[in-house]
Amino acid sequence: MRFAHLECADAARRQQMREARCHAGKVVAAFRRIDTLARVSRWVEWHRSYEDVESPLARRLVIVQRDIAAALSAAPAGPIRIVSMCTGDGRDLLGVIADHPRGRDVVGRLVELDPELAGRARAGAPAGIEVVETDAGTTAAYAGAVPGDLVLACGVFGNISLADVERTIATLPMLCAPGATVVWTRHRSAPDRTALLRDAFTAAGFAEVAFDAPDGSLFTVGAHRLVPTRCRSSRASTCSSSRASRRSPRRARSAASGTT
Ligand SMILES: C[S@@+](CC[C@H](N)C(=O)[O-])C[C@H]1O[C@@H](n2cnc3c(N)ncnc32)[C@H](O)[C@@H]1O
Image (cartoon, rainbow, N blue to C red; front, side, top):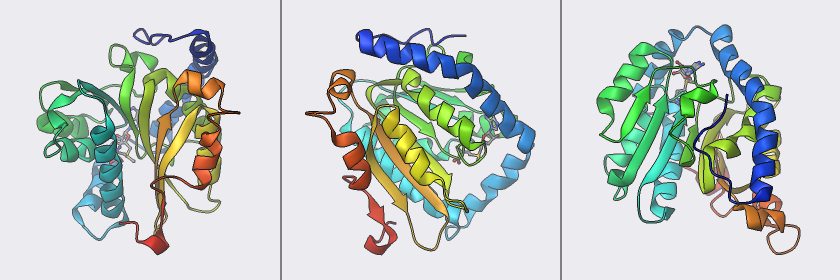
């Protein structure tokens, strides 16, 4: 089990990859547990909440799509590789690229286990975006599609144990090109674990770009950027911004400032 298309920029990145590989097997177990906890077919029903524009899920989608659009806007010229784990019907990404000026540059893979949802995603996906109906917890699901410039982990971290969430975050750099953005979601039901998740992203080498936790809702949306390795290795001096940025993210919103 390996991520065949990942390239190492330098020794530090190779070390990071070695450590991440140690986690990979456990990530497999984590994703499999999503299905153990809840039958995949119930996710078709879960998607119906999107149709109510006042629902938390629809409000969450607005923020997720804002972060996706921002990542596309910030991407350098050329193809933008995306990977979406447990993509559902793919509406978060597909809804953005239909209108975004960089939409035609987006290529990549959406991974979804449920046949009906995968079919819907496939029907809406342009050429260059493949929908793979397989287990997102197997590293093979991403072979040939990584490293991604944008990785989506929406609706994942609320459905696996905290330990598995932390292992998954530690493994995410394996899926990411330097400077890649990960957009993720997690509920805040008590006990609210989002601070731990944000710290886990920092520990894995990411800097926070945005974190939204609107009043009157339990959802949160995060966007984290993988800090290029050279910067990470010296972050105690010139690039010590990862942790600081968690406390004062460039685009962080609180509900008080009107997130959505
Ligand atoms: C909470 S939904 C999130 C869907 C989408 N990412 C979103 O935010 O709208 C979780 C999705 O994960 C899918 N899923 C569950 N276990 C999976 C697995 N092992 N591999 C791939 N997809 C899985 C479900 O079918 C469902 O579509």
